[in-house]
Length: 143
Image (cartoon, rainbow, N blue to C red; front, side, top):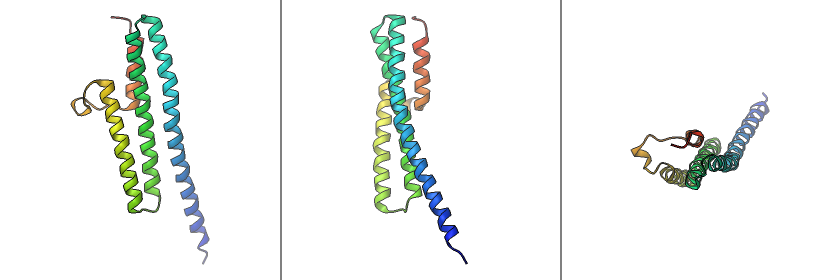
C-alpha cells in the first residue's frame, strides 16, 4: 500500500493555501498603493474642476480611506487563511486574534474619519463602496 500519494496531495494543498495567503497579502498591499494613486489623481481632478482645495482634500481623504479599508480587509483574509490552514496552536490563535483586533480597530477608526459617524450608527460600508462613493462625489458638479 502506497501512502506517498496522500502526502503529496497534502503538500500540494499546503502549497496552494500558502500561495493563496501570499496572493491575499500582495492584493492587500497593492490595493493600498493603487488606491493611493487613484485617490491622489481623483483629488487633483476634483481640484482642477472645482478650484476648491477643501473639496479636493475631502475627496483625497475619503478615497484614500476606502483604499486602506479594502487593503485591511484583504490582509485580514490572508491572516485567516494562514491560521485556518496551519497547524493550530494557542499562540497562533492569539496572534491572529490580536492582528484581527488591531486591523478591526483601524478599520472602524478610518470609517469614522470618512463618515463622521460611528459605524453602528450608520450602515457599515466596505472599502470598495467607500471608493466608489468618493469617485461619484468627485465627479458631481459643484452645488
